[in-house]
Image (cartoon, rainbow, N blue to C red; front, side, top):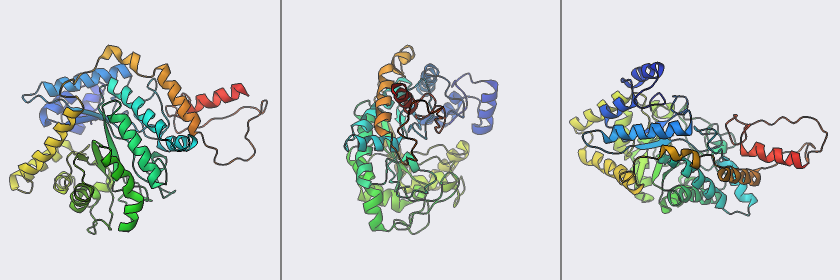
Length: 419
């Protein structure tokens, strides 16, 4: 992560924030110092102002990586699940989130076409911005209604339905568009009452429950060729009784994910700034333990310099071997090659306006929102009648699918006009 809308010329405030956060003033300097494999964009960090600006930022990032002694394009990524978790607002197309797409699937007779269409649409717009990795879809089966961190980010509570929709999204991103999907949060974050951003959850499922409840979407995504699997910062005693978070667990990552499920792609941590992975070990140990567990990609460490020094020290001491690290580097390079980054790292900034937030895309978002609109409770308010007064529409935020410019609101407005 880094602060600012430019990789080379951030504002004075963003440059100072970078110095405090990563020890250098610009993203380009950060890339040169640490030879990063990729970056991720955040709205709170000032990375996102407009689609055209994001495309220019992505090109700056790539120029920084390709200007090094060993030139390698960077994997530019973002957490754009849509719905409750999204970084890019309008004029980019705002889509329903996972549970909305799950409802749309039920409304369409169980088909997963809408989920694939949504992923392909999202992927096309992200690719136009130079973003080649989306940290989506969420493969958690939300069997706990009190879950404070997953909830509507999940497609639903039926493992087989979630598996079908996860596969649809993986294919939409990867086969239809050519950007990487990341299924998360292995081995399953759907039955927790603790948010791993601020605490350390424990999943109490038995091994048999994991096989039938949590595992099906991940098995299906792996069979569909998912580029990336993201680990969850949670303890799962039935899979590893040590009490370590799955991100740092050799039995979970290498034993279950690699060994039992046969996954050969890139394994990434969730953000290493989250409390769930920092509760048991210090920030100096977490990157080393994650690599020892079998993880390939260290995402968003709280102290980049410390993470870098810790991994190098572990290599010098023999705690990590070059062969172990090389295996991860090869997987990441293979992903970049497979997704065309080595051949075509830059995007056409002039074309962004023709590809992002188009009328065709917005119309598809409206259709998906209409199919997914679900009546949960009716106190007699519905059906709406003319002359009943004003109607207040609430959404998670103005930029969301149900916000003031989102497809759900537009669908409702059309219904009211028809009434």
